[in-house]
Length: 557
Image 1 (spheres, rainbow, N blue to C red):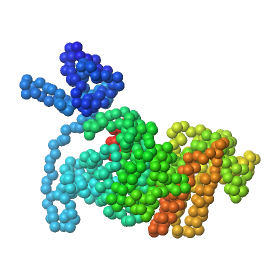
Image 2 (tube, rainbow, N blue to C red):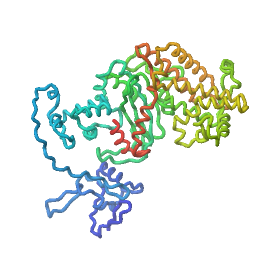
Image 3 (tube, rainbow, N blue to C red):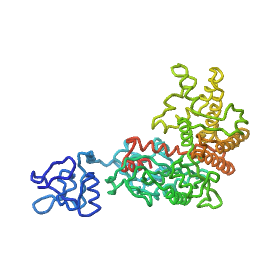
Image 4 (cartoon, helix red, strand yellow):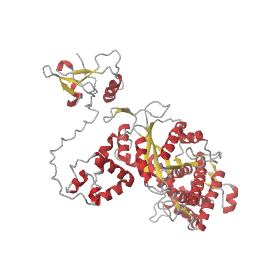
């Protein structure tokens, strides 16, 4: 008597069910074990560990010549289990009637540039069912990669005979997307870079992690197991996906160029060879990486240390162009969230005495107490002094802490003005004015460090405003270096980030404007482009499995 080893299955051999033993080949056995997903299933010394035939698709069997019996294919993999959704099978293709040949003269200049399948497509009202040739698909992929989805759709609207984007995605499934640096993507970037000017080729490399659901899964498309950590010198099941992305400094283009599966504890020094290889690969296709942007996580700080980057020297000699610098910069939105968290947790920020005297401040302390008083004062009012400031902002949930908008509800001109009103009209302590001053200063700092339009961009068009902005940023560095956060007043990582980010922007904008750039949008140096990509990946599942992440990343690329 042999029982089926699948979870929830009680089929037995004496009931007429055909049983199949687990493969002796280790690779095939791993795939079977991954699909069965039973943690306590022991294989050693257990010859009765078998699966019944109901867990295999029909195409996993072959008929024998003798008696018409069926047997399991040598590469068969079980896929039907109660804990897994039944795989969807595509419908058989309908019978396609070839379109009538088009009567046209091929001597016209327009037609001479088209392939035969494109000319045939011009004679059909619907593009569905057209068999596009390899050359047309290859050219269409190049056009989409260079012009982007919006530009590609614009060409289709102009009646240019091109395959649909979904068709290109299906044809690109052969492109290797294994963890690591994506070599084939860089070959496509070579085509894109060929149509760029020298300034447009300057770019920023961003890297960040997103959470995934731990677990090893069989990828049905590649036949490989996904879910283990892929970073060098690391083992175990992955809990995060680490993505590297290039984005333009002067134009809006971005591209994922590498990814890895990582765990909860990562040695940041392992990032160094990956970053160097990406910078070198970018240079080989004509792109110039001028900055590396990360958050303030401990692996990233370890990576800075491995490069020799410090708070006072946030750059190294460029790996490809020794006469230039490669800058390192913490992500500005992450910094503003970290500073807001420090304040609402009750840490007192002490302003240095020279700044207190220069700004004529009433006290030298910034705290959360004035903000709590303001929230209580305006609670229940129809017209609030600071409409965006609420108890939920000062006592955020886990997901609320991740929002930059929540931090900017604290560091805003309206909140600063509301605190001044509390002092002048409601007779609150004048020490509130110090908190008001600090909030407004950080609001202005954030505007300059994440500018998205020409008005707030750093530019020589209006030299007076430019010089004021540069002077403000330099004063901010002195303030961040002299601050004391907490009762002990020890140096905090957020101070390192604030100084590094401000120093990097001052140096980079000076180099770019000297090279001939008309203005510098500092938001191009943040991780916003990578965060937007993560939002697209999370659309179907906020915490995807390793295989779901792989499929979603392929669609984004």
